[in-house]
Image (tube, rainbow, N blue to C red; front, side, top):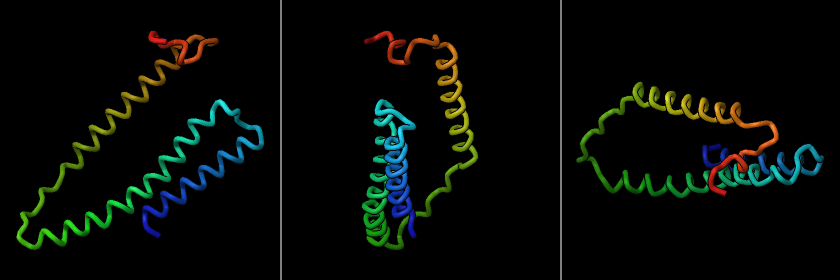
Length: 113
């Protein structure tokens, strides 16, 4: 099973799981938009991967053998940048969560209502 099929299957499983949570009353309807968005992202990423694959293989066959060898990306640098960005994002979200008063939602905290 290729990656696009796995992503589509994961989206369907997520959608069913969220439906079961909603039907059993574990989560309210207020949390459902976030669940639906994540399931739709998984479903659409599978389709996007399937569409991109034939285009990529056509481009590789059309280029022929006279192309320059591509320079290998610096994976150590990219990994380090990704780690720092994600650490900053997580610390920022946790900081907002800690500073938020108990009875106030995140939307009420925003200065632009």
